[in-house]
Length: 278
Image 1 (tube, one colour):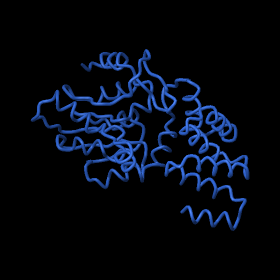
Image 2 (cartoon, rainbow, N blue to C red):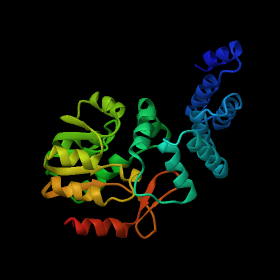
Image 3 (cartoon, helix red, strand yellow):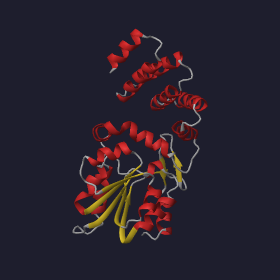
Image 4 (cartoon, helix red, strand yellow):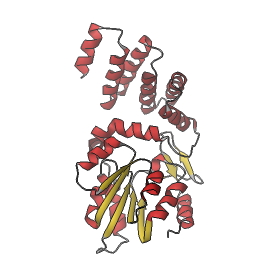
C-alpha cells in the first residue's frame, strides 16, 4: 500500500488524499513522525482537509505534543463542526470533563481498528482485562456456579465472551460497532447480538440476566448512573455485575488526556449502593 501511494504521488504530486492515507498507514505501524509529515504535506496542498487535520491531531497527541494536537483538533472543528471525535479529544486535552464520549466517536474508533483489534491488544499491549476479571470473579464465586443468561456489554470482538463462555449457557453481545460485532460472530460464542447504545438497548430488549459484564467499556463513559440503572432493571435477583474501570483519585470521574474516563472507587461504590448492589 505504501508503494502504491508513493507511485500515485509520483504521478500526481498534488494529491492530498494519497498523503493522508499514507499517513494512516504509517500511524498504524507506529511510525508517528512519518505520519505527521504525511499529514502536514496533505494540509500544505489542501489546508481545508478536515480529516487530515484530525489525523494530524491524533499523531501529535500520541507523540506527546499536546499543544500541537490541540491546534490541529481546533482547526478540524473549525473546518468540520460535526466532527464529534475532534471535539471529544479537545475536551480531553483541555481538561474539560464531559458526561460521556459521543457515540459517534466510539463507533468511529472501533470501526476503524476492528480488523486489527485483537492482534493489537493481545500482541502489542499484552491485554488481559477479560482474564483478570474472570480470575477475580472465580475468587468470590462458587466454583460450580453456572449462569442461564449473560449480557456482555460492549462485547467488541468477543474477548470477554471467550473468558466467560464456560460458565454461561447463553451470552448476548451488545456493542455500538457493527464491525466489531461482525468479528465477534465468527467466534460462535454468542446467542444473539444487539447493536446500539447500552442503556437504550437494555431498555428496549427487556431481557433478564443473572450475569452482566462490561469489560473496558466504562472508559468511554464518565457518568455511569444511567448504565447502573439500566443494569439494575435487567438483573435477576442474586445476579452478578462485573466490570473494569480506570482508577482516578478525583471525587467521581474525570476525562483523561487519552480521551478515556477514570472513575473513583468511592463513586463506583456509591452507585452500587444506590442501585441495590452489594
